[in-house]
Length: 638
Image 1 (cartoon, helix red, strand yellow):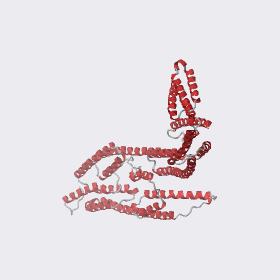
Image 2 (cartoon, rainbow, N blue to C red; image 1 turned 90 degrees about the vertical axis):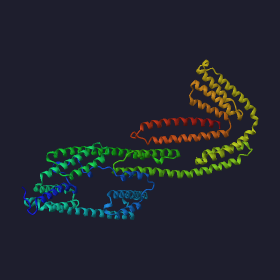
Image 3 (cartoon, one colour; image 1 turned 180 degrees about the vertical axis):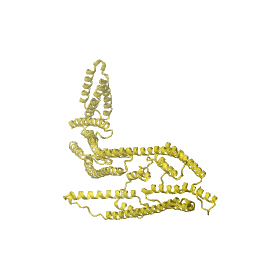
Image 4 (cartoon, helix red, strand yellow; image 1 turned 45 degrees about the vertical axis):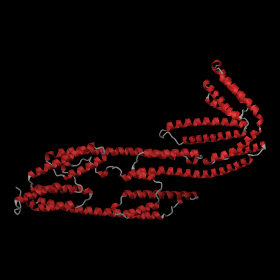
């Protein structure tokens, strides 16, 4: 029998001991960083949450999207103002992440300024080693505020560490006192209330330094258990507590088991940490089942922790893939040579490539936190350089187009002054000279191009129509030519291809085409109809005889030119149209040739893109060759 205090009745002592036993089970709920009872040490697989990767916060996840959508870049002054506002907050409200982000943004701008200063310094003929950056008052102010923020955080940390050390020393004193009271077996019951008061005080004291928290909690638990063991609490009461604790831990094991099916790995891991905290707050269970129930809980925890670790390993691998993909995109647009673009079409084509790269960037997920912002800054810098160069080109082209428009308007005025002249030969020569001069003038803005061309053309057409009417004596000849061409069409329709055979049939077609070309002009009102009828029957014969369509088109073009005859106005107009198409095809070909250098074997889908571009380039080269032949046909007539 344990010694009893004669000043306390037995019933009162039993009641007091019962209350003490209940308090032992409740003590663990208020310990800052408790460890499990000896047989229930947490498996090494249960990692401390701070040491494992964590999912990015919503603010961090939205940071890149907000940066990419921003049209107004941050300035040093705006960043300085943001840091100043941050420095006015309480130390606990200032996060290291926010300070680091502002510092990174500020020095990204400052470093760019110094780089520009150095380049200007060297371009002025100075030695790079002699360069000294100018003092930046904003930078000095930024450093001063940054030092203030660091000092605040340092003071906060020092205060917290001092408070934790003070708490540790007081808790150590409480543990020593409980051990001392537990060692006095004869008077243990007299110290019961004091021990309870010390337990309450222990729970009310704040956190202690993390390195000693676990050992301190173990010492406290051992001291309290030893004290109550000395009291020899009623076995039935302990059995009841063991049974209640076992029931609560069974519920925790069941809830932990449900977490195996939780799809959200992070949520499952965090909920598991909460279950471990609850486990620590529950008192001991019967010794015979203590290892078994802890083993079940520990095995479930190990499985969930393994899923958690695997999740972050896979995310790290995905981030590495995304980082490589973003680096490849940066290299891709950095390989584009903007300084060699000299036409609107080339700039438009390059713009499509840049925009396509930006769309590809949006499809790539996040890279690691340390490289994601740097990669985006690198990517955006190249894009900004391109659009700045494009804007500069368009500003320069605007002036050139304006000058060309002024020159073409002047030609229109000169043509309009000549259109009513009756000096047919002299005026025709002068208008022909104006048309040649027109070709030497470059392009004008698209919104004015058709208008100014139609004005110039109207003046030329009016003169040549008047000149044509003056030559009305040719109408009878044109009517005879019309009858002769109708006869040629009838002969083409009457050809019996099967009887003649392919070779003879082709020869017959060619002979009739040559005869057609030898016939002179027809009446103007009939020329389109007769030519359409001729072209239809020729195309039908070419198709039946399987003659090259390109050759057919060229023959058709030559027929058209022959129909025009010596009408220089129409010939110049047709040549002008062909030259515009010719220049356009050459510009497109140049763009494709430039873009061929932008692609490499390392580029994604490079093989298929190269083949497609080669096919397009070949078609353009064929078109250019045809245009050159057509222009040569017209030049032979002029």
